[in-house]
Image (cartoon, rainbow over all chains, first blue to last red; front, side, top):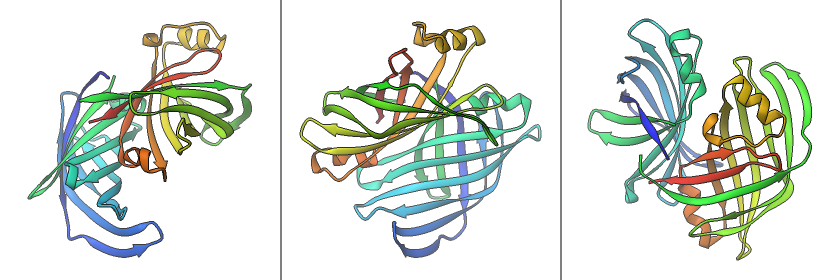
Length: 132
Length: 150
C-alpha cells in the first residue's frame, strides 16, 4: 500500500466521562478541548469534539471520534474516525474521514486515510497518512 | 505506513438495483452473488445471501461504497465484513468502467477500509484489525486486495 503524510494531529482532552456499562461494553467519552494539526497541505487548530470509546471486554477499545478542525486560513473541516486501541499489543490505529465545503480543501472529501495513534502525557497524537 | 497482505477478495455481482436520486446523491445497490478470498492466513468463499454493495454517487462525482458481505472460511468460520470506500477518477475512465471495459486500476482511485467481525476462534485476530484495500473494478465484479495496517 502506498501512502503519503497528511498531518500530525495533537489533541488536548478534558477529564473522561465514564458513561459505564452499556449493551456494547464500557463506554467512556473523552472530551477534546483543543489541539493543533500540521501537514504540508494544511495546518490549523482543533476547535473541539470528543472520542466515544467502548471497551470490548478483551482489553481492546473501539474508538469513534468526531471533531472540528479550523485551518489557518479559516476553513472548517469536519473530521471523524473509527479505530482500535489495544494497549497490550501497542496497536492504536484509526481510519480518519474528512468533510469540508472549502474549495481549497476539497481534496479531503475524496481521500481515505489511516492514522497511527500515540498516547502522550499531554494528550493523544495521531500521525495521519493519505492512502494513495 | 506498514502493511501486510491479508487477503485478495473477488466478488461476483448481479445487475444493480438503481434506487435513483435520494437526498445525498444517486443510490444504487449491487447484489453480491458469490466470490472467494485467499490470503496467507485465511481463505474461503463469499456467501451470496445478504451480501451487497450499497453505492451512493455524490454530487461532487465521488462514489461512496458501503459493502457488507458474509465470508465463510474453509474451516467453516463465518466472518461479517463491512467496508466503506471511495471511487473516483477522470470522467473518461469512469465512463469506460460504466461500459464494463477493462481499465487499469491505477487510472482511478478505488480504496476501501474493511472491518471484520467473527466469533470463530481461528479468525478472532480479525476483530481488532484496521485494514485498507485497493479495488480493481471488473465487469464480472470487483477484486479487492486487502492489507492489514501493522
